Image (tube, rainbow, N blue to C red; front, side, top):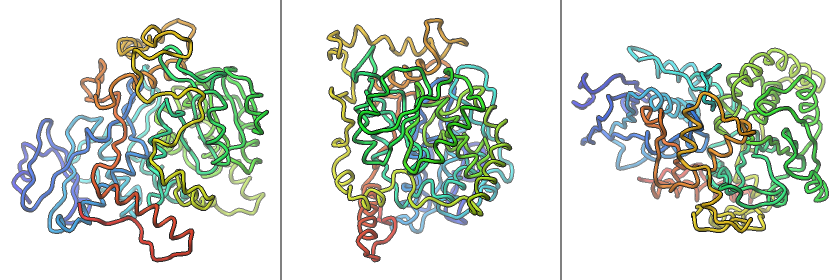
Length: 505
């Protein structure tokens, strides 16, 4: 090993991921090793950065996991690096170290066919400092935490039931639609659940952040077989806006930040079990109430533990399930497992059935003759808003009310600082969902190329505005192109397509 690896004053701990080839190392802060003739070092702490709401810091989303795996595969299969040891290093900041370990662990499960226990043992065996745990997106003392192992188990079960397939993943669609200005929506379960923030009667920019009307979503819903909308929050639009367009709409209201009662949970599960079509679920921010009920479905039908379900939900839609909702899911775990066993027994299903396609599948789009959606630049993918909502909000632009946005843009970084530093939310008539929406929108008001620290987060080194990093090099882009070609080859019966491109970096 290189002298840098042997320097005990710089290396805190190290794990061998692939014998004599791939290592995961924790170095002391501010140590940046230089590449040698035999070793390549790389760090992704500032490449894949979690967008926090309050004191949450991870796990990194499924798009980050995919991009990391593609990048690491490219390095491992690079001819120019074939004789080199590859070292992924992180620093000793607990939050960054945990996120980095999760990426490595997810890679081991998705690509090296390790079990969660095997991956965890590799990351913790020997004189390895303990990892901290992830917490929820609140500004209160955490009531509940999820561990690295919970996240690894969630990845393993998601792979088992084909919730996601990294050989068939449309990273551009995820990146585009997760942005507030482009719909703020995420697929949670392939072909079944789409989570989004609550629509409003009229589309436009209000008080500095974008709002989408029901009509904004019509085209996307129709393209993706979403025929049902479940609203969990107070009315902010007329249900007729959906029903008169041919969609089914149902209200299952319970207060923001609270947990559903048994009647609502049963109603939600029965409704979603009886419809063959996808269901769009929203509350105000599409995080707490929305995540709790979708999580209940996942626990019942796929036997995820509450911790595993929460981990998966946050991988798909960061910030999902907040406060007491986490404990509620844990309390319902045993009951939902029993109900799931009964459900499968009544239908003569021995085990949960894997999905044919994962979330954000290229092949599924191609099979539905939607090649045009992924063969154009992502900029051509738009929600059908009457007014175009720009990706970058300039203070001199005029809002739909005719007033300059800078008059309405009250959600400045100073406002968000005060929200994050307060132990209680301001008594302004706003609910948890309002504040989460405001924080999400505030990210888009800052330059997407600038990372901004807020208050306590400064010591963590957490950035509150950092997008997923698209196509860092030609290899990454080549892999996306290869995916499209492979999907088309499979649809056309051409078996010559390979899996991911293993091009040189």
